Image (cartoon, rainbow, N blue to C red; front, side, top):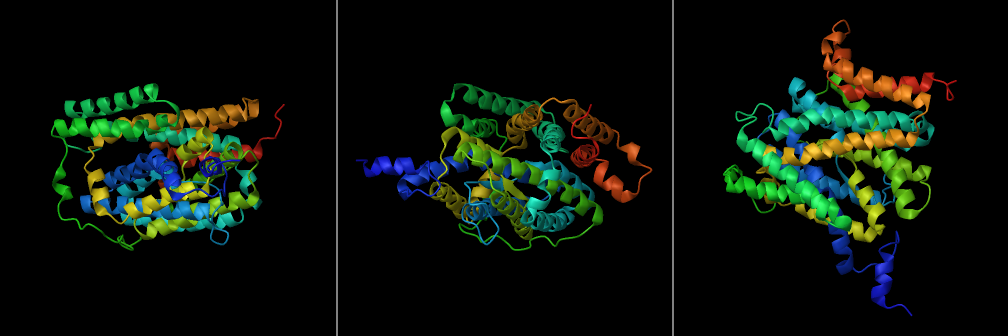
Length: 437
């Protein structure tokens, strides 16, 4: 006969097993720690590009935790056709960072919010009908796009490492020292840590970098004053503005994000549950991505999507219990009502974030290359990946090449290598015969 303790431990590895709250909390907290830093870092990067105030940034961090928790609960326990029913953890996506930075700089943050609202609704609607179109986005297309996303973020990480784009002390020895300390801390922890603790290397690096910044006098604590203990996130803190170019650009990236979500959902079903993903699960996962991103925009926040870090954590630990992961989502929701959490995080120096993100973004590049490898190095796949990356990365490094095109085309492609790679890869995948002689 099994004891209750043995049974509850075994239920952790079952989707709907009954697990006591006391045992579920540490497993849920582990998932939150694995994605916490990556969930808030895009906000600091885009907020910096958009020149948002400290108070606005704190509110966005607060909203990010709240909406990520709500999104995770909907993925775990679907509402109508929205949600997959799988142990998917949601968070703010890095996929949109480079595009949203460009839109915020050129049009303002209000336009960014307008594009998120429209793009999110479009992805949500497409998600409901995913079985009719998802095969158009072949694995080699998704792999090429993920690789391009990684390359497009490298300059973002480098700017943060130097202290933040436009900072008066950009490239100072203090910033470079902080970035280096943080990066080395991440690497050392990743080498020495065992098992799933390796997933916390970024968090460890942030803590060490933050302590170093305090000792060097590089942390400004003035933003901690004047915050209430509990606060309700503000609805529509920014009035949305709508421009065709940014809407089309951001919608294209939502389609890119959809391909990543398809991959995450498929991988989770295979590695965590040992079976193929169903069309219903794919459709619900994409619908949750899209509609929750639009909901996020209503609170002035960035799009959310499934987190690959947590898919990897499920593959490593085999913990798929929905109750256990739901406890982590509830922790995030509670944190979303306490502004001091966001205020403390907002005191992180840009160089410390850069020390962490430079490694994150490099991992995205390698993830894309691994995806290309899994697709197979057939002549057809090589041609699609090589041409889409060459045109997407090459042409956008010389944006003057687009000067003969209408303004809307320039807005979409001139500074956005990801959109260019996506369009070229889709076209190549459609026109090239399945078996190239």
